[in-house]
Every structure is written in C-alpha cells, then in structure tokens.
Image (cartoon, rainbow, N blue to C red; front, side, top):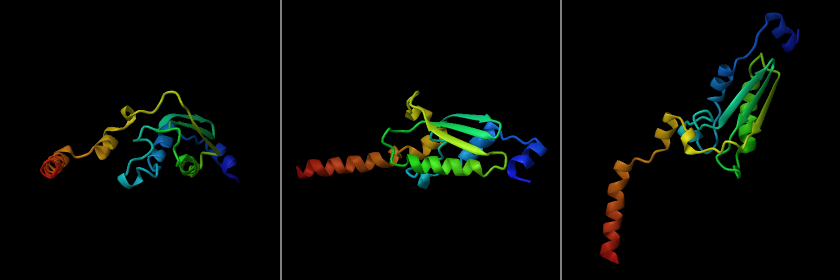
Length: 133
C-alpha cells in the first residue's frame, strides 16, 4: 500500500499547528547559530492545509535574501517528513512587509545587544579618542 492509500485508510490529516511546530526546526542560516527558527523570526505569514497538500507563505527580511532557496528547501523537506503530506509549496508574499515587530520575544532577546555591557566599552573608547585627538 502506498503512502496516500495507507493515509486514506486511516483517515489521517496533518494540522496547521503541527506544520508550524515542524517549522520551528527550520532556521535562516543567518540566525541558526542563535537558535532562532523561521517561526520565531516571524517569517511565517500563513500555513494552509488542503487535504494532503500544505502551502506555506513566508515573508523575507529583505528582497535580496541570499538564503531564500535554502529556506524553501529546508521547510519543504521538513514538512514532507510527515506521512500525511504529499506536497509542500513554499511561496514568498510581499504584503505585509517583514519588520522587527514580527520577532517572537525569545528571538528579540537573543538579538538584543547587552547594552549594560556595551555602554562602558563605548565610554572607554570615547575617552581614549578624546585623549588622543
């Protein structure tokens, strides 16, 4: 029995929340080292499940994103791992525009510079510049 026949016999269907949970395993190469998923980055605009097909709409942080093909492939492969899924389509949408407001709280914390540590370094550098110049 093939994947589709087996699934129909068991009446299985993937849910939108399962897809979003799976997308938490996908990372923009620019944020992977910080552990910020495409979901936490706020790149996922919409997920539509139609039977065995999943459509994912994503936003890009910039129109010149060099990692878009890597992101598409990563998301597609991750969601296709589900037995309930036959086809995954990933598409870019340009409206709305991605802004930092879309970051999750955890992503925002991971991307925030530690000002309490940086301010003394800045003051020291400025003091040294004033002495020398």
